[in-house]
Length: 113
Image 1 (cartoon, one colour):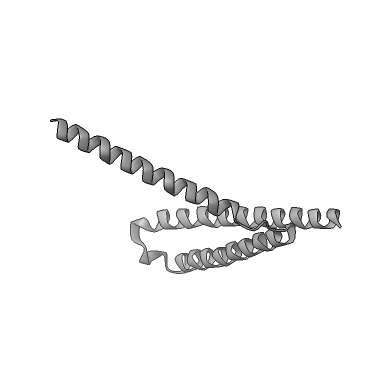
Image 2 (cartoon, one colour):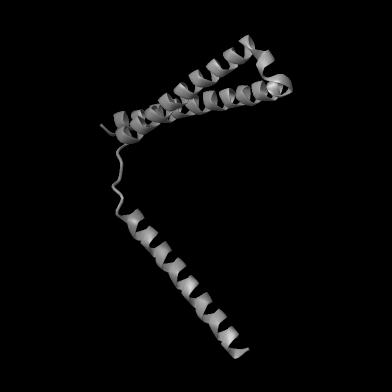
């Protein structure tokens, strides 16, 4: 009985030590990250907006294919269409937001100059 309790305590201590060590490593890595300029941040948001626009194009193509061949999808077709329309809406909102954020950061660059 004592051996089991001792084993559990030792294992608990080891797991706790490993998790603390992993967290401290994350903190050190976060401190060593370079600080990005507003222009770099704006460029990242532009890149994200472009990816969203690519996804929007893909979703529109899927919905167009569904409209042309809805009989391929059977009973699940309406669920398919609703799901992809929701994704399309989500991607459109995300693209707009990323563009707004890029604009905000570019305005910060102009103000700082």
